[in-house]
Image (cartoon, rainbow, N blue to C red):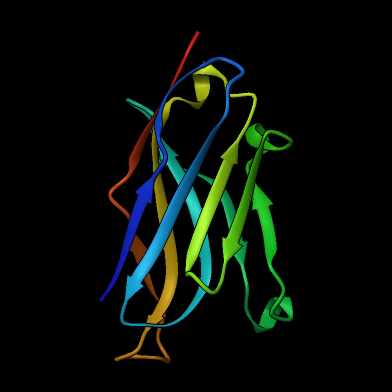
Length: 128
């Protein structure tokens, strides 16, 4: 099994910054993609940012963002620590949500099959 643990959420004023962290642990053979998603009250969960590293990307980090966070958020990955980070700047009230970390990973017991793993979520609240 693979476990994901997020940290770094909190309450911040409009225009402020937060840095979310997510660490993967357990029986990990490989991680292809790590990503951040968020879910605001009464809304569907949405993809915020992804970082993929695979044969398709020539084993370079390929990064994508949802349009609403481009230029404000930055995702990064520490391969040695099986960790992913989300630096969030110029935060807005509409960024308020529970932020979830996701990993597409192959466990050691099944190295040829990828599974999707989720963290428990961390609350980000941006006050106006």
